[in-house]
Image (cartoon, rainbow, N blue to C red; front, side, top):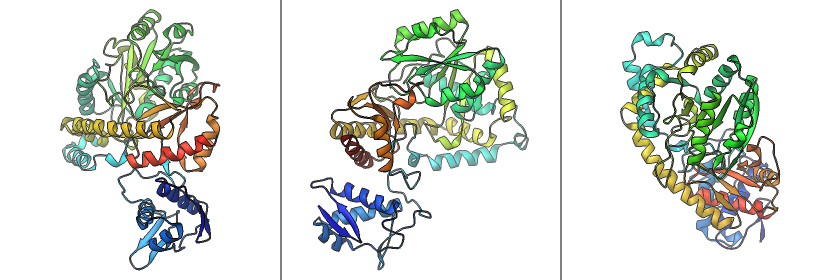
Length: 462
């Protein structure tokens, strides 16, 4: 049905999807300038009467858009359109949109930033600041704070089966820097090529090429990376995500794990283990790290980006003996070392037990989010296929074979939905079954349902 509201035509569906549709159309009208800043909207009673819906639908719609910063509500002044340029986000129980154009964020690598343990982290920062000797305000040797390296060696040993000591741990600015450093170190040692999973994390290819390495894609199937195909490449190193392959969500099969280690041993090649979100397994304990089996063949890399927040820019690399000197040299040349205060704060955070408690709480939290996500996809996209184990912060959703993946991504972006396509994770985009890599961690359960419902309407229009 169509009715004019403030010179704006609203087309609302029948049934229980009225409120999400009304929210979406008002957001779109505001973003496109059809409803200008300062325009006063009808009262909830008047608009409910005009649209033939309950007043509660309108009040909930207005409340949601006020919370998101699209509308302003003042007692006695009614409800008016806010300025997008200066709007301030308010806490709503849902993760804030990162930009005015993003209404539903399914970015696959984003944790729930609202759950960042601010009070516990503040205590850790305060303790680090108060206890840090004055001499520690000087330059670091590049490897990182001994306190954090010691805490990580212990924690990773217990949680991921990593076999190491503090002297083998290097602190980096996240996985991205750790991988860039090892690529430079490999090139300096004479390496020419590195193998990557195909499909895989898209940034690894760009980083390796920037360092001067040839990139050799190796196919991934339901058992993980094909070691047989890897052996044909002649690569000097390989980067893998064995505990939860990105983006397919499979686990590297036991036979492949053994074959991969045999390959590295026989060719004297390096395995780079990206353990990006293995802490979040919901149906059982995660498989142990490759590093724990052969620490001399594997460089283990992790970060705080998924378990705490990307903004911390703290990662770690557990180095085989042969890589310690080259990696330390590369790190010193890159930046001289990461910020010490944040490292000491993380060390205090781990040592106090707050880190383990936060992980335990977030596993339960993300497990609920994943169940809500699965229910929403199953309900709104019944023809889709959800792939991968019960783990991580995202899932691969395969669409009908007749759907145009690129068109879905483009149309979804125009509707305010941020997502990633499966095709962009391949070294060479190819005509595989269309799919989407959807993050579920950053959105409240209700927002997941609304966003997937809107996404379903985009897919249905293809």
